[in-house]
Every structure is written in C-alpha cells, then in structure tokens.
Image 1 (cartoon, rainbow, N blue to C red):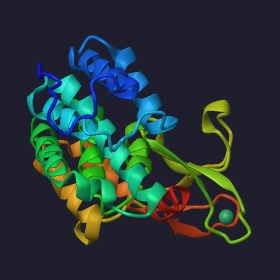
Image 2: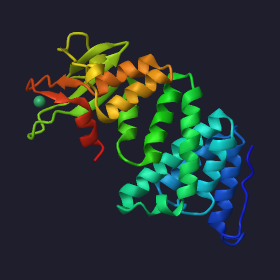
Image 3: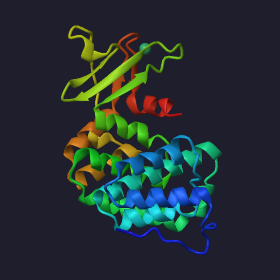
Length: 251
Ligand SMILES: [Zn+2]
C-alpha cells in the first residue's frame, strides 16, 4: 500500500482541504473503503469542492496506480482520467496536464500495464477508457466505453429536426436498433445493425479493435465493430454512424 507522502510543495498541514483530501486518499489506498472513493468522486469530480490541481491528488493517484493492488489501481486510473478530461473541457486548456506531466505519464504507463493483464471484460473496458482519457486526444471515451460495457447506446437520430431517440442494442439481447425501450415490450419494431467490417476499420476504431484482440478480449473487439458501425433510425430510416452520435451526445 503506497503511503500518502508529503513534500515541500504541499500546503500547510492545517489547511482543512488538505487534511480532508489526505484522509480520503489514505482511506482509498487501503482498498477496503469504497465510500472514500465515492467521496473523492463527489468532491473532486461532481461538485468540485476539492481542488483537482492540489499537489496531493494526481501524484497520489499515480502512486496508487503504480503500486496498489488491481482494484485500487483501477479506481485511481479511472478517477485520474476523468478528472483530466473534465479539466480539459471545463477550462478549455490543458493546464492540469501540463502542470502534472510526469504524473500523467506514470498514470498512462500504469493503465497500459494493467490493461494487458486484466481478464474481466468490464474491468478491461474501464482501463481502455482510462488510457484514452489519460492520453487526452478525445473527450468522449466515457460515452464510448459506457455503451460497450452495457451493450447498448441510447442516442438521438442525427436528423436535424431531432427525429427520434433510439436504442442501439448489441450483445445477449440481440443486435438491433429500436425506437422504444425494448425491455418493455416484445413486439416493438427492431432494425438490424450494420457492424463495421473489421478489415475496413480506421483511426481509433482500428486501434481499439486491434488492441482488444491483442489483449485477448475478442468479445470487446466484436462490440467495437457495432460501436464503430452503423444503425438505422426506426422513424426516418436514415442510416447513421453510431460513434458519430456518441460523440454528439458527449459534446
Ligand atoms: Zn430519424
């Protein structure tokens, strides 16, 4: 278990925020305190009552990612990635990344190491999300990965008039788009999906597909062909890019 260390750059010991942050990080590092992680998400991410740029935050998360057990490391990577993307979006600068360049590099290295040894499907997906968030080239990794994990996307038809909300379902429940909540009824209309041909994938889709196969996650690779494929709107019959609407929904 990594110690939550202090250095000369840390504010005075009696700063209330520093004390609360230090206590939460120490509890989170024990691996037995999910409430501490929940509180860190609330205070750092959801309501911003603690400062993400505080010198304890990213350095401690990097320590946990490098030396913690799998669960703590995964939690640290998920939170750190989300905080960085949120800061990019909120301030429209990459100042937090620049301020903590060595820590971000350590986090990314750890995320890539854990990714290669993580067998559980969903844990793997969240590590891929952390990798993308730590790299910082896209801001919609959360939306992409949430759909792969849940095997569904709830999206808007790209029609400029906002024609319909629809579900894109892929996995155990079948492979289709539908305008209604399929779980509520068996006789709603469903339309077949058009997964991407793996040989024709390009860009991020190509990279993530190849990564999933190389990491032994064939099922994730297959799900990605649906995320990077096309669906048909049940209302207007327009065929559209699934990932294009995921990006739109995340903007
Ligand atoms: Zn439509």
